[in-house]
Length: 169
Image 1 (cartoon, rainbow, N blue to C red):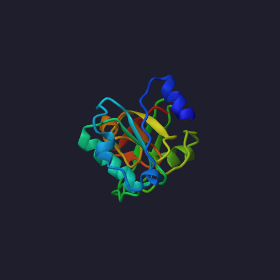
Image 2: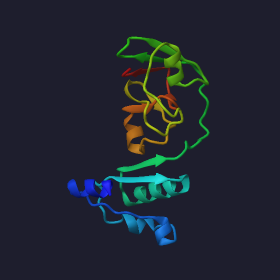
Image 3: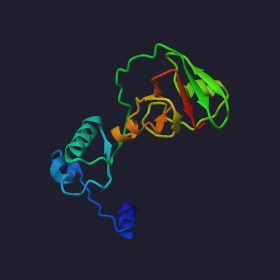
Image 4: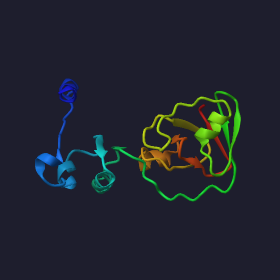
């Protein structure tokens, strides 16, 4: 009721779909089709459904597809073979991140207190602005466009592609 009231108050078109009421997985292309490329689309649920949702949005040319996962997607990422240096713009600290250790854990070990929660790349609490350097993304939150922009990263799971990152910490 609260979501419907908010949608009405903000003049936002809201469409609900519940699998248990329909009896079958939704035809996502039909459900999402014709809504507009500038709209924002949100989906939460199990991995197969989210994968289908993202694929449908991509096929429809919808760049504003947002998802929330119940658990991290474990993609086999190439393990880092070199130490990366993270320069923290606000604190002025430089922190070495060795292979096999997350940026988040390295920052915490260096005495910093970055925001974080799940440590799995699904909650977004550790999202940090990237000021310089290239990111190797491994989160389950950012869209392809957001990853390509290289403006933010989830420091709990993502790494540095090069030798140095400058973060807004």
